[in-house]
Amino acid sequence: MVVTFFSCEGTYDKVQKLNLQDDMPIAEGLEVNLKYTDSGQLVTNLITPRLLDYGNFEFPYQEFPEGIEIHFFDQGNESTVTAKYAIRYNFTQLVDLREDVVLTTAEGNVLEAEQLYWDQKQKWMFTDLPYRITFEDGSYNDGGRFDANEDFTIFLSRNNKGMQRISPESSDE
Image (cartoon, rainbow, N blue to C red; front, side, top):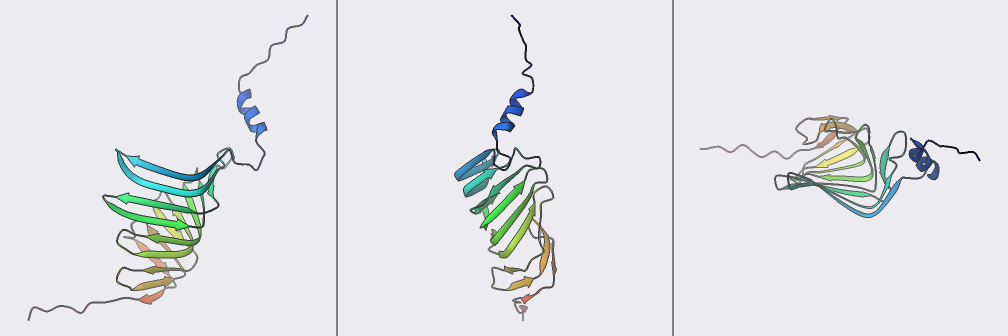
């Protein structure tokens, strides 16, 4: 009679990886409605019909193949972002929003683009594709590409044209 001992250390992770097909997500969520809070206050609400989590990949990411809707709340103000497709990379915290991207700020400004990158670490947004920003007063800016911080207090636009509404100066005469 021979007794054999096998080491189980580290084997569970290997078996888990063997059970997954190489190109399959580790998890799938349907009708997802995630709410992020900070100190009891709602900060972000992410809504998507389908979420695919590729956290098992060497360069992990989450994919939103049927679109995404995100609501941001800041001191009672709400901004929203919608897109027909999105992907978020875990390591870089870069979000790639594609197809009919619409960002509506709490102030009522609307950004429309076919693609928008959002760097969550640097709190920066940019695109190299044409876009349009329509301001609350009806003025607009069409451009070829831009870079901006999240609250648009820094905005660098290239190849742009638009219409600005200017109020006449009021006089005290």
